[in-house]
Length: 190
Image (tube, rainbow, N blue to C red; front, side, top):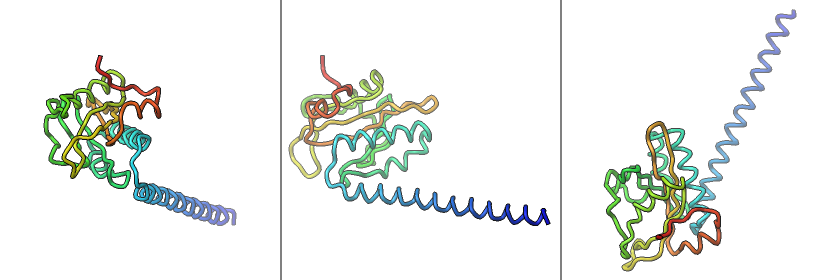
């Protein structure tokens, strides 16, 4: 009789464990669905949003390495305006969420209309400070003239690989960054 009770108790415990696992999986699924709906509902990209998404992508690269590329490539936020890019420290683009044609291209010689080698600056601040903001000018999709833009970049490491992970936003300057994140490093010419 005691064996039978133990067997029933074991089945009951297993059922409770299974039910609690299903609940947890449903909660996680719900959280992910909420995150996606929040991103779609968010009309305007913000500096805080950029920083959070880049930090998230950097953590993913640190744990998964190159296996995270597809996930990062598909990341969109801020009403679809925001995307993530990943470069290596040698200057080659590895992932570009907006223009996949840039992938595998050497970008350190790319400069803005003011002569700013912003990919060089991305790599420099990431390698020297671990993270930071860079200001440059770039043409918005559909526009004819360059607009001010800032990008937030983070250095992520996985094994012997180093990645410069970033995202940017138009119509923002380092003054805006300093007002919102006064302790964050910014790239400034000396």
